[in-house]
Each structure stands twice: as structure tokens, then as C-alpha cells.
Length: 464
Image 1 (cartoon, helix red, strand yellow):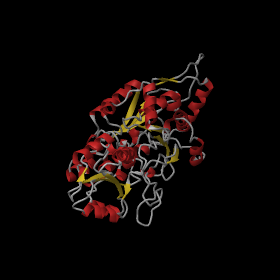
Image 2: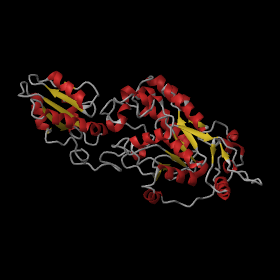
Image 3: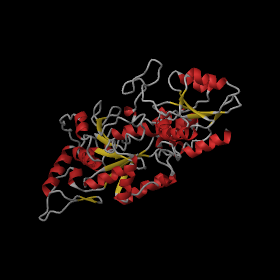
Image 4: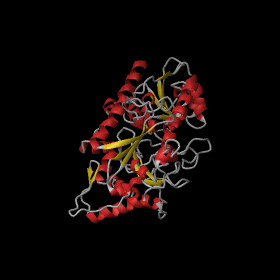
């Protein structure tokens, strides 16, 4: 993510008194000209932004570097006491805006928070947020987290976006001492061995925390369909449940998610229609884009988040920036748990041509050395977005194999069954697909992540 400030000498941002000329014109804000707003409205905006100036001391007066994003113009003004703002019921506001367009939500956010809000930009399709902000005609800021491990294409895209919109992205960097300690202690690629959370905490979460301490609200590109297992309930606006804002303490930061209810294909239709520049990695099969060592292109039948931290369990595919939106299995803000430890969830892979195997059933299948017919079985968890993404392909495979010599089955391998599946059935992550040959006791694990029906059928035909 990266923060950008539209260059502007407008009094609405600097806080200085706005003196109209004899012939008022639409004021110029960086490369953005404000249209369709009366001159009187512009004056009222100037007053609003002036009242919202933060009480942050000038950067030059600090004994060390600033630990938060502060508007560059704010370094030249005298400190003021921040006026108390009337408490807003954001849960109610989220309900009122549930059916609003992203443009309307963006306009509301920028109108409400002025220079105290910024767009979090990751260098992917969330460039749509910048386009929406541009279309409102209001001044806006953009920030991004430069982890030091991004793809070259992403850095090039940042430069393209800055030139296209005439803005400057405010980049936040990880603490050099923390990065040095992590790399010297555990190496450059420790996340492949013990998980990505520690690296993300140093390179992303802590820089983000510093950035947000200089804001009262931020705007993200989260969508409900990005990760059905973790983001399916995000509202369009909320009090941030994890991070703190400029005033400090719980409830001091508001989080806006203007595209929460927008499907991924609609985002892309919007980008094409508006001729918005996009990261060149998208044309190479990348959908969700993060750091270079932890991001790869996805294959047909895969969910977009499957290109991130692919060596980990599906439920771990969050870096910590949106931790407050993660649904915990059996916990608060999560899915209710059954007595066997598996989350209550609508089952998937439902077809009359699919056999549901119990623990005893799959144990017996695995023990047989001379089966009457071969089997192909998917080990799955219904909450897993990657299992959900391949459901249609696997059901189609079962339909095509109906009446043939090959049986198609499924075994739910989460909850109490997970340890057994890991030990006895080669489960490493969901979904895992096994082929049980007719005359062999040893199951063969599907070796690739191409989960389209043609690839699955080729695997079956090669072994049956």
C-alpha cells in the first residue's frame, strides 16, 4: 500500500484564509479541477478542512523522524487543539450506505474527513479507489507500504499512477533495524519455513500502524468476494477494530471499504471502461498482488487469493492489515463450531455422482490392496475459499465419470479429521486430491494446482 498527496496550495488544505478574487473560478487541486460545485460550497469546504487541522507538532520540531503520515503542508503551521467531533454511529451509516455505489461511498468519506483520510493502495486492482476519488472532484491522499520486496512491475506501476493522476504517493517503509534483525537471525526467506506472519508484521503491519496514527480514517480496497473465508462480512464503513488513529485509543480510526459489495469482474469492467492504467502483472496471471516472494499467478479453477502464501493453510492467507475482519473458526466474529471442532458451514461438492466418505469409509478405502474400481477423492473443508473455487470443476468431473469404472468421492478433512488426514492421507493444504488405483494400496496425490475439469480428467485417464 502507498500514500499519495495531491499537490495543492488550496486554502482548504493549508488552513489559511481563502480570499476570493473578483472573478471566482473553479479552484485547481493538483491535477484535479473541482467541477459542479458552487463557489460558496468551496468556501465551506475550506472552513471544514481548516477546523480539522491536527494537533501534530511540526516535523522539524521533533527530535527524531515522524512516525506517522502527516500532511506535508502541516509542518509549517502552528499547533492547534483539535475540536471534538460529534460521535457518529458508523454501524447505522454502514446500513444506510449498503446499497450505495462505490463513487457515492467514496464521496461521503472524502467529504466527511477531508485531509484526515487517505487511500491505502497496494499496486493492484485497488487503483479503482484512486479513480473513484478522482471522479468525486475532491482533494484526496494516497499511501502505500513499500516492503522492499515488491515486484519491479509494481514499482513501475506506482510511477505510472502518479503521472496519470498528477499525485504523489506517500510511501511508508519498514524500520531498517527491525528488518536487519529479522534477516540476520532467520534469513531472507524464513516465511517459507515458519509462516509469513512475522515478516509481514515487520514489513507491513508496523509501518501501516505508524501511517494510520497520522489519520482519522482510511480507505481500503477490500471486497467480500476476495476471500470468502475471511472477508465475507466486511461493511462499507466501520470503526477500525484493530488500529488507532490520530486521537489515539479504541474507536479513533474509521475504516471505509467502498468496493466491499462489488464483484471482482465488475471492478475490472470499471477499470476498462474508464481506461485506468493497471499493473502489468495482471496480464501474466496475477490477480492478488503482494510481495514478490509470496505472490504468484493463479491457474484456471483457482481462487484469486490462492496466489498468495500458497504453501500455507487457506485460513492463514491474511497479512495482518485487515485482521479485524478475519472470521475465526469457532471464535468471536467467526463461525459457530460443532462438537467435533469443525465449523458449521454449508457443505460443498454436492452431487448425486459424488460419494460422501466417512472416516471409516476412507480408512477402508486406503487399506484395500486390490480394489474393484479406482477412486478419485477430494479432501476438503467447506469454509475453504480454494475448495469453493474448484467445486464446479470437481462436480463436473464426477458427472463426466458417472457410469464409468472410476468412483468419485469427497472426505471432509478439517476439524478432528485434520490430524488423521495429514498423517495418513498426505494432506498438506485444502483442497488435496487423491487417486486410489485399482491394483495398488498407495494413493497418488494430484501433483498440480490446475483444477479445471480437463486437467483433472487428464490425471484420471493417465492412471486408470
